[in-house]
Image (cartoon, rainbow, N blue to C red; front, side, top):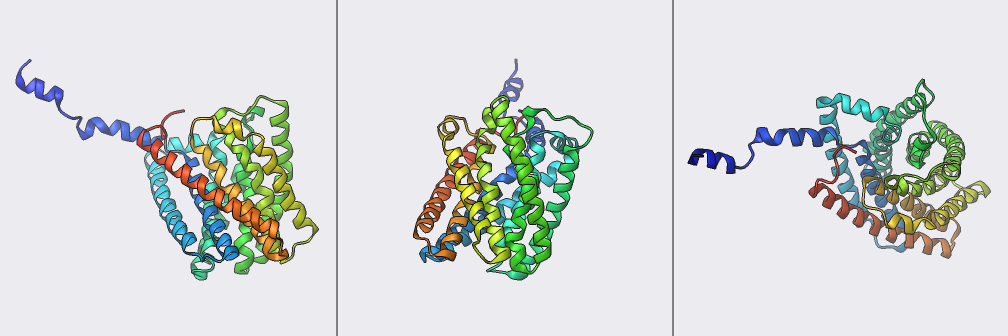
Amino acid sequence: MNHASIAEAGAAPSQADLHPLEHTRLEEFPISFFAVTMGLGGLTLALRAAGHAAGFGALASHIVLALMIGVFCLLALVYAAKALRHPQAVAAEWQHPVRISFFPAVSISLLLMATALIELAPGIAQGVWLLGAGLQAVLTLSVIANWIGHRAFQPGHLNPAWFIPAVGNVVAPVAGAQLGFVELSWLFFSAGLMFWIVLLTLVMNRLVFHDPLPGRLTPTLVILIAPPAVAFIAWFRLTGTVDPFARILLNAAYVWAAVVLTQAPKIARLPFALPWWALSFPVAALAIASLLFAGATGSVVHRGIGLGLAALVLVIVSALALRTLMAIRARAICKPE
């Protein structure tokens, strides 16, 4: 072998050599990445509620909000590039029995963003809310049409992530009622509450009478906490009162939190994957609901629970962000399942 051949053999790979790897990683970029912005949105609102309750201001929540907006824009650009270059990969995710449930994470992130922007920029918040609400309505109907369409789902396909498309509608009234879209907020709330009852029955049947959830999806059990917790917040924003129904919703969230806590040792032993971000938003929602209840009733116990949960969600999101960055560096995500 001559010197030129040796030099050529030992040279670093060219851009053309690297292109197929980059091509594959973009193609495998999952829609479930938007669970990250849901978690950051929940943390933003939890820190704001904790700041109001404990009197330490809103600077921390503003920093997390800026981070959320930046991450959302980055994820949106990357996924848009995937849609343009690999439309077949996006179509495959839409047909996937699990990943399809994460598409509305995009619209829910926008609704959370609008909620966080109300105090800072009401005009921008209104525009973001309208965009998020419209997208949520389209995605809800599209996903449900897919569920009841011609394809057959198996019991093993059902998991708590199925709450995201339909029950996620209860997020809309949290900001919608404050922005003046009262009747539209009631429509979203009614849809979310109705599908919560239906899907809760189906999910419990799957968890009790069929095979256990796959390890990667076990963290999605925490999603069971979110519907009643967010529904309590939405109900309070719509009615302005803590009535018996509001108390039922909040205490249902506490019951589900206790149930999920029994599965914590199993979840802690699992290797990291993007569905771990399912841990963040439900805990944040319960923290916000607890602090909202404390503010309305003067309950010291609920104030303590809310502040404790807000601190917990800060720890959870920080740990998840670190694990996600480590996984990206190790190329452990954005690869074929």
